[in-house]
Image (tube, rainbow, N blue to C red; front, side):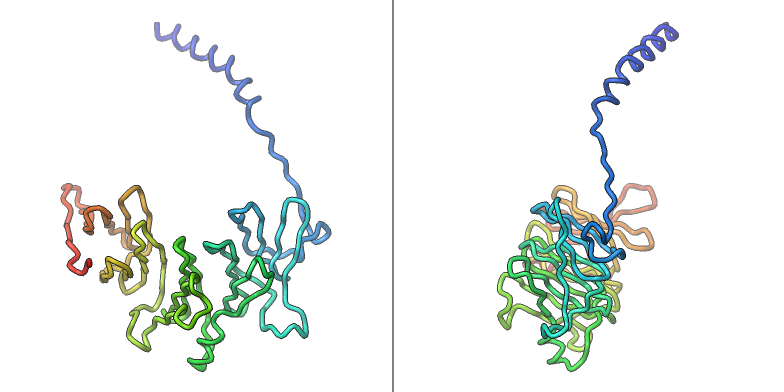
Length: 265
C-alpha cells in the first residue's frame, strides 16, 4: 500500500510540476550604467518610494528612476549649498520626501515637490557652535524623524510643524535628556509612543513615557505585542492592551517576570 501511494504521489508531482513551472513569472534582468543615465557607478543605497519611484544614493548625488529614465539631483558650484554629492544612505519619510546622509556625515532632506535639498540641522549646529556627525536617520510613520549622532546625541524633528522653531528638539548628554553613547533603533507604535533603544537602556516617549535600564537593540511588533531583544539574548515583550512589560525566562521553566509600568499616564 505504501509503495502504491508513493507511486501515485510521484505521478501527480510529475504531472503538476510542468504546469507549476509554467505559471512562474518571467524575470528580466537589465544592466544600468552611467551610459543608461545613472549618474555614477558607485551606488550605496537603493529604495523604492511609496509612489513607485526608485531612488539611488550614489557618489554623484541623488538619482531618481521613473521606469523610463534617470534624473540626477546634486549640488553645483555657485548654488549656495554645502550639500556633499557623495551619498551613503537614503530613507523616505511619511510625506514621500527623501532623507539623505552624505559622505561627510551630514543630513539633508530632499523636498520632492520643490526638488531641493534642505540643511535641516544648520540652525542647531550654529546654536551649539559645532558640527554634528550623523550616524543614522529613523523616519517614523507619524511624521516624526529621529537623527542620531556620534556620542549618543540625537534630535527629534516633528515634520508636521517644520520649519517652526518648536519642530526640532535636541537630546543629549549635555542637557541630561538622553543617557546613551549609541542609539540602536527608534520606532513608533500604534499608540503614538516612540521607542528609543540605546546602549544605556530603553526610553519611550508619549503616553507611556517611561525608561527601562535594559539595553535592548532589536524591536519587532506582532499584532498588539512588541518584542524586544538584547545582545546577550534576553527577551522581553510589551502588550499594548495590558500596558505591561514582561521579560522571558530562558531557563525553560515557562515563567515570566512581569513589570507593571507605574509611569504610564
